[in-house]
Length: 333
Image (tube, rainbow, N blue to C red; front, side, top):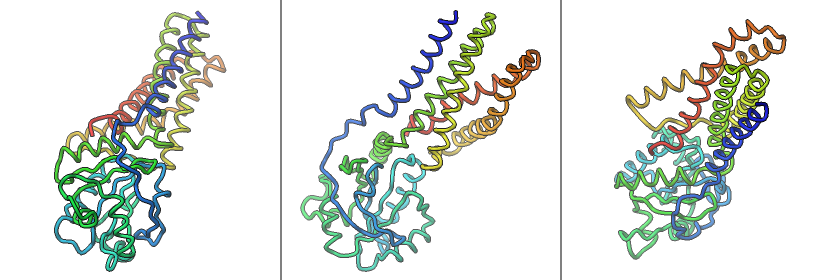
C-alpha cells in the first residue's frame, strides 16, 4: 500500500506539472505572421522613451488616434478602454498619435487624465515628427482591403486595431466597428499573452488541482486505516499548496491583478466566489499548520477535530482556485 500511495502521489504531482507545462507551452494560435513590426524610438505620455524592443516579451495591441479628433477617435478610445478591462496583464495597449505637431507627451498626458484612462499597461505615444509618424504608419499598416493606396492615410484615419506578438511580429488587424472581430482580437490576444511570468496562472491552477487530488487520495487512505500513506499524501498536498503560494505572490507582484471581464449577474457571482475563496485562502495556512502540529505531537483526537474543519476549507480553496483561473484565462472572451 505504501508503494500504491507513493505511486498515486507521484501521478498526481506529475499530472499537475504536465497540465501546467501544457498550458504554458502549448502552441500559440495559428495566426499568420504578416511581417515584423517596424522598429521605433518614440516618447510616451510620461516623457519616457518607448521602443519596439522594450515591448518584447508581451503581446501588444496598437491603435492610431489624435487628441483633437472628434470623429472616430472617441469611439476607438471607448473600445480600447473595454479591451483594457477584459484583457489579461500579459497584453499591452499602445495608442500612437498621428498628430505629431500638437500631441506632445504633455498633451497626451492631459488627454489620458481627462478621459479617465488607467495607464497601468496603456501607453499613449507621441510620434514627434511627420517623418517618424509616416515611417511608423507605413510599417504598421495592414492591408485590410478597405484602404488601398496611401499607407499613411490608411493608418491615420484607420478604425483598425493591430495585434503584435511578444516577438514583435504583426499577427492581424481587426475592425473596431465589427463586434465579431473585436471578440476574435480578444481571443487571439489572450492566447498570445502567456509568455514568461504571464504563464504562471496556468501553473498555479495545476498546483491547485494537484493539491486537491492529493488531499482526496489522502482522505481515501485514512478511511482505509492507512495512516502512513495518508500522511505522505497530505504532506504532498501541503507541498503543492506551498509552491502555489510562492508562484501566486510572484505573479501578482510582477503582473498585478487580472480583472473579471463580465458584468451584471456574472460579475456578482464571480465576486462572491472570489471573496469566499480569498477569505478562506487566508485561513488555510494557519489551519494546516495547526493540524500538522497536532499530528506531530500525536494528539490524535484534537488532530481529527481540526482536520474535519480544515480539509473541506482547504479543498474548497484549491477547487475554486482552478475555477477562478478557468473563468479569467480560459473562459469565453
